[in-house]
Image (cartoon, rainbow, N blue to C red; front, side, top):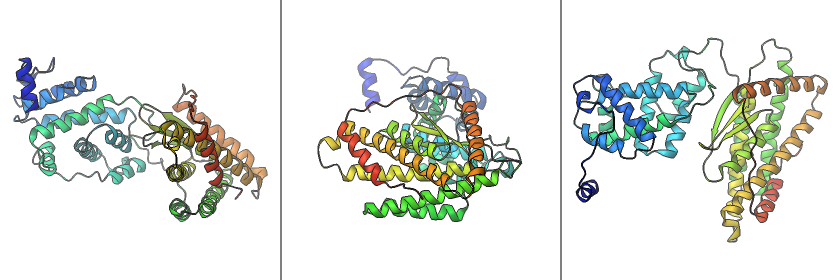
Length: 413
Protein backbone atom coordinates (compact mmCIF):
# COMPACT_ATOMS: atom_id res chain seq x y z
CA UNK A 1 0.00 0.00 0.00
CA UNK A 2 2.76 2.43 0.89
CA UNK A 3 4.54 1.76 -2.42
CA UNK A 4 1.37 2.46 -4.39
CA UNK A 5 0.75 5.71 -2.48
CA UNK A 6 4.29 6.93 -3.18
CA UNK A 7 3.87 6.19 -6.87
CA UNK A 8 0.62 8.16 -7.02
CA UNK A 9 2.25 11.15 -5.33
CA UNK A 10 5.31 11.18 -7.58
CA UNK A 11 3.57 10.18 -10.77
CA UNK A 12 6.47 7.86 -11.61
CA UNK A 13 6.32 4.24 -12.64
CA UNK A 14 8.79 1.71 -11.25
CA UNK A 15 11.81 1.52 -13.49
CA UNK A 16 13.86 -1.57 -14.16
CA UNK A 17 17.45 -1.54 -13.01
CA UNK A 18 19.71 -0.27 -15.80
CA UNK A 19 21.15 -2.92 -18.05
CA UNK A 20 18.82 -5.73 -16.92
CA UNK A 21 17.59 -7.99 -19.73
CA UNK A 22 14.13 -8.08 -18.12
CA UNK A 23 12.05 -8.81 -21.22
CA UNK A 24 14.40 -11.46 -22.57
CA UNK A 25 15.08 -13.05 -19.21
CA UNK A 26 11.76 -14.81 -18.89
CA UNK A 27 11.99 -16.69 -22.18
CA UNK A 28 13.18 -19.74 -20.24
CA UNK A 29 16.92 -19.18 -20.55
CA UNK A 30 18.11 -19.57 -16.95
CA UNK A 31 21.52 -18.12 -17.84
CA UNK A 32 19.87 -14.82 -18.82
CA UNK A 33 17.83 -14.88 -15.62
CA UNK A 34 20.99 -15.52 -13.60
CA UNK A 35 22.74 -12.58 -15.27
CA UNK A 36 19.81 -10.32 -14.46
CA UNK A 37 19.72 -11.44 -10.85
CA UNK A 38 23.46 -10.96 -10.46
CA UNK A 39 23.07 -7.42 -11.81
CA UNK A 40 20.30 -6.65 -9.32
CA UNK A 41 22.39 -8.01 -6.44
CA UNK A 42 25.30 -5.84 -7.54
CA UNK A 43 23.13 -2.72 -7.78
CA UNK A 44 21.71 -3.36 -4.33
CA UNK A 45 25.21 -3.88 -2.93
CA UNK A 46 26.22 -0.55 -4.47
CA UNK A 47 23.46 1.27 -2.62
CA UNK A 48 20.44 1.09 -4.92
CA UNK A 49 17.88 0.42 -2.19
CA UNK A 50 15.00 -0.02 -4.60
CA UNK A 51 16.63 -2.43 -7.07
CA UNK A 52 15.55 -5.59 -5.27
CA UNK A 53 11.99 -4.45 -4.72
CA UNK A 54 11.54 -3.34 -8.33
CA UNK A 55 12.92 -6.58 -9.68
CA UNK A 56 11.03 -8.90 -7.32
CA UNK A 57 7.75 -7.15 -8.03
CA UNK A 58 8.17 -7.41 -11.79
CA UNK A 59 9.14 -11.08 -12.01
CA UNK A 60 7.32 -12.60 -9.02
CA UNK A 61 5.07 -14.59 -11.32
CA UNK A 62 7.77 -15.69 -13.73
CA UNK A 63 9.55 -19.04 -13.74
CA UNK A 64 12.76 -17.61 -12.31
CA UNK A 65 13.68 -20.32 -9.78
CA UNK A 66 16.32 -22.02 -11.93
CA UNK A 67 17.91 -18.67 -12.75
CA UNK A 68 18.04 -17.70 -9.08
CA UNK A 69 19.72 -21.00 -8.30
CA UNK A 70 22.36 -20.54 -10.99
CA UNK A 71 23.13 -16.96 -9.95
CA UNK A 72 23.32 -18.00 -6.31
CA UNK A 73 25.75 -20.82 -7.08
CA UNK A 74 28.07 -18.41 -8.88
CA UNK A 75 27.93 -15.76 -6.16
CA UNK A 76 28.44 -18.11 -3.19
CA UNK A 77 31.42 -19.66 -4.96
CA UNK A 78 32.95 -16.19 -5.30
CA UNK A 79 32.45 -15.57 -1.57
CA UNK A 80 34.19 -18.83 -0.68
CA UNK A 81 37.01 -18.12 -3.11
CA UNK A 82 37.35 -14.77 -1.32
CA UNK A 83 38.20 -16.65 1.88
CA UNK A 84 34.82 -16.61 3.64
CA UNK A 85 33.90 -19.76 5.57
CA UNK A 86 30.36 -20.98 6.32
CA UNK A 87 30.40 -19.54 9.85
CA UNK A 88 31.71 -16.22 8.52
CA UNK A 89 28.90 -15.97 5.98
CA UNK A 90 26.34 -16.83 8.66
CA UNK A 91 27.70 -14.32 11.18
CA UNK A 92 27.86 -11.52 8.60
CA UNK A 93 24.30 -12.30 7.51
CA UNK A 94 23.00 -12.51 11.07
CA UNK A 95 24.20 -8.96 11.66
CA UNK A 96 23.08 -7.38 8.37
CA UNK A 97 20.03 -9.11 6.90
CA UNK A 98 16.78 -10.64 8.17
CA UNK A 99 16.12 -14.21 9.27
CA UNK A 100 14.76 -15.25 5.89
CA UNK A 101 17.90 -14.18 4.05
CA UNK A 102 19.97 -16.00 6.68
CA UNK A 103 17.91 -19.15 6.14
CA UNK A 104 18.33 -18.89 2.38
CA UNK A 105 22.11 -18.59 2.73
CA UNK A 106 22.23 -21.67 4.96
CA UNK A 107 20.54 -23.71 2.24
CA UNK A 108 22.79 -22.20 -0.40
CA UNK A 109 25.90 -23.29 1.50
CA UNK A 110 24.49 -26.79 1.98
CA UNK A 111 23.88 -27.04 -1.76
CA UNK A 112 27.45 -25.93 -2.51
CA UNK A 113 28.86 -28.56 -0.14
CA UNK A 114 26.79 -31.35 -1.72
CA UNK A 115 28.89 -31.19 -4.89
CA UNK A 116 31.98 -32.57 -3.10
CA UNK A 117 32.95 -35.86 -1.51
CA UNK A 118 33.44 -36.03 2.25
CA UNK A 119 37.17 -36.75 1.80
CA UNK A 120 37.70 -33.51 -0.12
CA UNK A 121 36.08 -31.22 2.49
CA UNK A 122 38.17 -29.89 5.38
CA UNK A 123 36.90 -30.94 8.81
CA UNK A 124 36.61 -27.32 9.98
CA UNK A 125 34.50 -26.45 6.95
CA UNK A 126 32.23 -29.44 7.57
CA UNK A 127 32.00 -28.75 11.30
CA UNK A 128 30.83 -25.21 10.64
CA UNK A 129 28.11 -26.44 8.28
CA UNK A 130 27.04 -28.99 10.88
CA UNK A 131 26.79 -26.26 13.53
CA UNK A 132 24.46 -24.33 11.22
CA UNK A 133 22.36 -27.39 10.49
CA UNK A 134 23.03 -26.92 6.78
CA UNK A 135 21.64 -29.92 4.90
CA UNK A 136 20.03 -30.51 1.52
CA UNK A 137 16.42 -31.14 2.59
CA UNK A 138 14.73 -30.23 -0.72
CA UNK A 139 14.26 -32.42 -3.80
CA UNK A 140 15.56 -31.92 -7.32
CA UNK A 141 12.10 -32.09 -8.86
CA UNK A 142 11.42 -28.37 -8.39
CA UNK A 143 13.63 -25.27 -7.98
CA UNK A 144 14.90 -24.77 -4.45
CA UNK A 145 13.43 -21.26 -4.29
CA UNK A 146 9.87 -22.56 -4.68
CA UNK A 147 10.29 -25.30 -2.06
CA UNK A 148 12.03 -22.93 0.33
CA UNK A 149 9.27 -20.33 -0.07
CA UNK A 150 6.64 -22.95 0.82
CA UNK A 151 8.64 -24.08 3.84
CA UNK A 152 9.16 -20.51 5.07
CA UNK A 153 5.52 -19.56 4.37
CA UNK A 154 6.55 -16.78 1.98
CA UNK A 155 4.94 -15.54 -1.19
CA UNK A 156 7.03 -15.84 -4.33
CA UNK A 157 7.79 -12.11 -4.29
CA UNK A 158 8.83 -12.26 -0.62
CA UNK A 159 11.04 -15.29 -1.26
CA UNK A 160 12.68 -13.65 -4.25
CA UNK A 161 13.28 -10.48 -2.23
CA UNK A 162 14.91 -12.48 0.59
CA UNK A 163 17.10 -14.40 -1.86
CA UNK A 164 18.23 -11.23 -3.63
CA UNK A 165 18.94 -9.56 -0.28
CA UNK A 166 21.14 -12.51 0.66
CA UNK A 167 22.97 -12.41 -2.66
CA UNK A 168 23.49 -8.65 -2.38
CA UNK A 169 25.22 -9.23 0.95
CA UNK A 170 27.51 -11.85 -0.62
CA UNK A 171 28.45 -9.40 -3.36
CA UNK A 172 29.57 -6.91 -0.68
CA UNK A 173 31.92 -9.32 1.08
CA UNK A 174 35.56 -8.24 0.77
CA UNK A 175 38.43 -10.56 0.00
CA UNK A 176 39.86 -12.30 3.07
CA UNK A 177 42.76 -14.62 3.72
CA UNK A 178 42.20 -18.23 2.65
CA UNK A 179 42.63 -19.92 6.03
CA UNK A 180 40.89 -23.24 5.24
CA UNK A 181 41.14 -25.22 2.01
CA UNK A 182 38.17 -24.90 -0.31
CA UNK A 183 35.95 -27.97 -0.75
CA UNK A 184 37.45 -30.13 -3.46
CA UNK A 185 41.01 -28.89 -2.84
CA UNK A 186 41.79 -30.45 0.55
CA UNK A 187 44.93 -32.60 0.55
CA UNK A 188 44.69 -36.10 2.02
CA UNK A 189 47.54 -35.25 4.39
CA UNK A 190 45.89 -32.09 5.72
CA UNK A 191 44.78 -32.78 9.29
CA UNK A 192 44.02 -30.74 12.39
CA UNK A 193 45.30 -31.64 15.85
CA UNK A 194 43.20 -30.39 18.74
CA UNK A 195 43.33 -30.56 22.51
CA UNK A 196 42.27 -34.07 23.49
CA UNK A 197 38.60 -34.40 24.42
CA UNK A 198 39.28 -35.36 28.03
CA UNK A 199 41.34 -32.23 28.71
CA UNK A 200 38.97 -30.08 26.69
CA UNK A 201 36.00 -31.37 28.62
CA UNK A 202 37.63 -30.61 31.96
CA UNK A 203 38.57 -27.08 30.86
CA UNK A 204 35.08 -26.34 29.57
CA UNK A 205 33.54 -27.68 32.75
CA UNK A 206 35.74 -25.50 34.95
CA UNK A 207 35.07 -22.36 32.92
CA UNK A 208 31.33 -23.02 32.81
CA UNK A 209 31.31 -23.12 36.61
CA UNK A 210 33.43 -19.96 36.76
CA UNK A 211 30.90 -18.15 34.57
CA UNK A 212 27.89 -19.26 36.58
CA UNK A 213 29.08 -18.79 40.16
CA UNK A 214 28.25 -15.59 42.05
CA UNK A 215 31.29 -16.00 44.34
CA UNK A 216 34.39 -14.19 43.08
CA UNK A 217 36.87 -16.41 44.92
CA UNK A 218 35.33 -19.57 43.48
CA UNK A 219 35.45 -18.12 39.96
CA UNK A 220 39.12 -17.22 40.47
CA UNK A 221 40.00 -20.75 41.56
CA UNK A 222 38.11 -22.38 38.69
CA UNK A 223 39.60 -20.07 36.05
CA UNK A 224 43.10 -20.57 37.41
CA UNK A 225 42.68 -24.34 37.27
CA UNK A 226 41.47 -24.15 33.66
CA UNK A 227 44.50 -22.04 32.73
CA UNK A 228 46.77 -24.52 34.49
CA UNK A 229 45.39 -27.44 32.47
CA UNK A 230 45.78 -25.62 29.16
CA UNK A 231 49.30 -24.42 29.93
CA UNK A 232 50.50 -27.85 31.00
CA UNK A 233 49.00 -29.41 27.90
CA UNK A 234 50.76 -26.85 25.67
CA UNK A 235 54.13 -27.49 27.38
CA UNK A 236 53.81 -31.26 26.97
CA UNK A 237 52.95 -30.81 23.30
CA UNK A 238 55.85 -28.41 22.71
CA UNK A 239 58.33 -30.91 24.13
CA UNK A 240 56.79 -33.68 22.03
CA UNK A 241 57.14 -31.57 18.87
CA UNK A 242 60.91 -31.40 19.36
CA UNK A 243 61.01 -35.15 18.69
CA UNK A 244 58.90 -34.98 15.54
CA UNK A 245 60.07 -34.35 12.00
CA UNK A 246 56.65 -32.95 10.99
CA UNK A 247 55.47 -30.51 13.69
CA UNK A 248 52.05 -28.96 13.21
CA UNK A 249 51.93 -25.96 10.91
CA UNK A 250 50.24 -22.81 12.20
CA UNK A 251 46.55 -22.57 11.39
CA UNK A 252 44.07 -19.68 11.58
CA UNK A 253 40.52 -19.11 12.81
CA UNK A 254 38.06 -16.26 13.05
CA UNK A 255 36.25 -15.24 16.23
CA UNK A 256 33.18 -13.04 15.69
CA UNK A 257 32.33 -10.44 18.32
CA UNK A 258 28.98 -9.12 19.44
CA UNK A 259 28.43 -5.38 19.54
CA UNK A 260 28.93 -3.01 21.25
CA UNK A 261 32.56 -2.31 22.27
CA UNK A 262 34.02 -4.70 19.72
CA UNK A 263 37.41 -2.97 19.79
CA UNK A 264 37.73 -3.49 23.56
CA UNK A 265 36.58 -7.10 23.21
CA UNK A 266 39.08 -7.62 20.38
CA UNK A 267 41.82 -6.34 22.69
CA UNK A 268 40.88 -8.97 25.27
CA UNK A 269 41.17 -11.71 22.66
CA UNK A 270 44.51 -10.29 21.53
CA UNK A 271 45.83 -10.42 25.10
CA UNK A 272 44.67 -14.02 25.57
CA UNK A 273 46.17 -14.88 22.19
CA UNK A 274 49.59 -13.51 23.09
CA UNK A 275 49.67 -15.41 26.37
CA UNK A 276 48.90 -18.63 24.49
CA UNK A 277 51.67 -18.33 21.87
CA UNK A 278 49.45 -17.06 19.04
CA UNK A 279 48.89 -13.84 17.06
CA UNK A 280 45.67 -11.91 16.38
CA UNK A 281 44.34 -9.18 14.09
CA UNK A 282 41.00 -7.34 14.25
CA UNK A 283 38.79 -6.62 11.21
CA UNK A 284 36.86 -3.68 12.68
CA UNK A 285 34.52 -3.12 9.72
CA UNK A 286 33.03 -6.59 10.06
CA UNK A 287 33.63 -7.29 13.76
CA UNK A 288 35.81 -10.39 13.86
CA UNK A 289 39.29 -11.30 15.06
CA UNK A 290 41.54 -13.68 13.12
CA UNK A 291 43.89 -15.69 15.33
CA UNK A 292 46.95 -17.55 14.05
CA UNK A 293 48.70 -20.42 15.84
CA UNK A 294 48.75 -24.18 16.29
CA UNK A 295 45.31 -25.81 16.54
CA UNK A 296 45.58 -26.76 20.26
CA UNK A 297 46.65 -23.20 21.15
CA UNK A 298 43.77 -21.81 19.09
CA UNK A 299 41.43 -24.11 21.02
CA UNK A 300 42.74 -22.61 24.26
CA UNK A 301 42.34 -19.03 22.99
CA UNK A 302 38.75 -19.59 21.89
CA UNK A 303 37.69 -21.26 25.13
CA UNK A 304 39.45 -18.88 27.51
CA UNK A 305 38.61 -15.63 25.70
CA UNK A 306 34.94 -16.61 25.42
CA UNK A 307 34.78 -17.28 29.15
CA UNK A 308 36.59 -14.06 30.07
CA UNK A 309 34.26 -12.02 27.87
CA UNK A 310 31.30 -13.53 29.70
CA UNK A 311 32.86 -12.86 33.10
CA UNK A 312 33.88 -9.29 32.20
CA UNK A 313 30.44 -8.41 30.86
CA UNK A 314 28.68 -9.95 33.85
CA UNK A 315 30.76 -8.11 36.45
CA UNK A 316 30.47 -4.84 34.49
CA UNK A 317 26.66 -5.08 34.47
CA UNK A 318 26.39 -6.31 38.07
CA UNK A 319 28.45 -3.35 39.30
CA UNK A 320 26.57 -0.72 37.28
CA UNK A 321 25.17 1.15 40.27
CA UNK A 322 25.66 4.74 39.08
CA UNK A 323 24.71 6.73 36.00
CA UNK A 324 28.38 6.98 35.04
CA UNK A 325 28.89 3.22 35.31
CA UNK A 326 26.08 2.72 32.77
CA UNK A 327 27.52 5.10 30.18
CA UNK A 328 29.17 3.95 26.95
CA UNK A 329 32.45 5.71 27.80
CA UNK A 330 32.63 3.97 31.17
CA UNK A 331 31.87 0.52 29.78
CA UNK A 332 34.35 0.81 26.94
CA UNK A 333 37.05 1.96 29.39
CA UNK A 334 36.10 -0.84 31.78
CA UNK A 335 36.44 -3.58 29.15
CA UNK A 336 39.66 -2.11 27.78
CA UNK A 337 41.26 -1.93 31.22
CA UNK A 338 40.03 -5.43 32.01
CA UNK A 339 41.61 -6.76 28.83
CA UNK A 340 44.91 -4.97 29.46
CA UNK A 341 45.24 -6.19 33.04
CA UNK A 342 44.15 -9.75 32.28
CA UNK A 343 46.74 -9.84 29.49
CA UNK A 344 49.49 -8.82 31.88
CA UNK A 345 48.51 -11.45 34.41
CA UNK A 346 48.17 -14.19 31.80
CA UNK A 347 51.62 -13.36 30.45
CA UNK A 348 53.10 -13.51 33.96
CA UNK A 349 51.40 -16.84 34.60
CA UNK A 350 52.69 -18.30 31.34
CA UNK A 351 56.26 -17.25 32.11
CA UNK A 352 56.06 -18.73 35.61
CA UNK A 353 54.66 -22.00 34.28
CA UNK A 354 57.47 -22.29 31.76
CA UNK A 355 60.06 -21.59 34.46
CA UNK A 356 58.57 -24.34 36.63
CA UNK A 357 58.43 -26.89 33.81
CA UNK A 358 60.32 -30.17 34.34
CA UNK A 359 62.59 -29.61 31.32
CA UNK A 360 63.07 -25.84 30.67
CA UNK A 361 66.38 -26.46 28.85
CA UNK A 362 64.59 -28.21 26.01
CA UNK A 363 61.32 -26.28 26.31
CA UNK A 364 62.69 -22.77 25.71
CA UNK A 365 64.26 -23.53 22.29
CA UNK A 366 61.10 -25.39 21.30
CA UNK A 367 58.94 -22.41 22.20
CA UNK A 368 61.28 -20.05 20.33
CA UNK A 369 61.01 -22.19 17.19
CA UNK A 370 57.25 -22.28 17.61
CA UNK A 371 57.11 -18.50 17.89
CA UNK A 372 59.09 -18.08 14.69
CA UNK A 373 56.71 -20.36 12.81
CA UNK A 374 53.67 -18.47 14.08
CA UNK A 375 55.22 -15.08 13.25
CA UNK A 376 56.06 -16.27 9.75
CA UNK A 377 52.54 -17.58 9.17
CA UNK A 378 51.03 -14.34 10.50
CA UNK A 379 53.22 -12.24 8.20
CA UNK A 380 52.17 -14.41 5.26
CA UNK A 381 48.48 -13.95 6.02
CA UNK A 382 48.71 -10.26 6.95
CA UNK A 383 51.75 -8.60 5.33
CA UNK A 384 50.35 -5.07 5.81
CA UNK A 385 49.01 -5.39 9.38
CA UNK A 386 49.37 -2.32 11.59
CA UNK A 387 48.68 -1.45 15.23
CA UNK A 388 45.78 0.81 16.19
CA UNK A 389 45.06 2.26 19.64
CA UNK A 390 41.78 2.61 21.58
CA UNK A 391 40.59 5.97 22.90
CA UNK A 392 39.50 5.93 26.57
CA UNK A 393 37.22 8.66 27.99
CA UNK A 394 36.37 7.33 31.47
CA UNK A 395 39.03 7.09 34.18
CA UNK A 396 36.48 5.58 36.55
CA UNK A 397 35.70 2.84 34.05
CA UNK A 398 39.39 2.13 33.57
CA UNK A 399 39.96 1.79 37.33
CA UNK A 400 36.96 -0.48 37.77
CA UNK A 401 37.99 -2.67 34.85
CA UNK A 402 41.52 -3.04 36.20
CA UNK A 403 40.19 -4.03 39.62
CA UNK A 404 37.84 -6.59 38.05
CA UNK A 405 40.74 -8.08 36.10
CA UNK A 406 42.74 -8.39 39.30
CA UNK A 407 39.86 -10.39 40.77
CA UNK A 408 39.88 -12.70 37.72
CA UNK A 409 42.76 -14.62 39.23
CA UNK A 410 45.32 -16.24 36.91
CA UNK A 411 48.14 -16.85 39.34
CA UNK A 412 50.94 -19.32 38.89
CA UNK A 413 49.49 -22.79 38.19
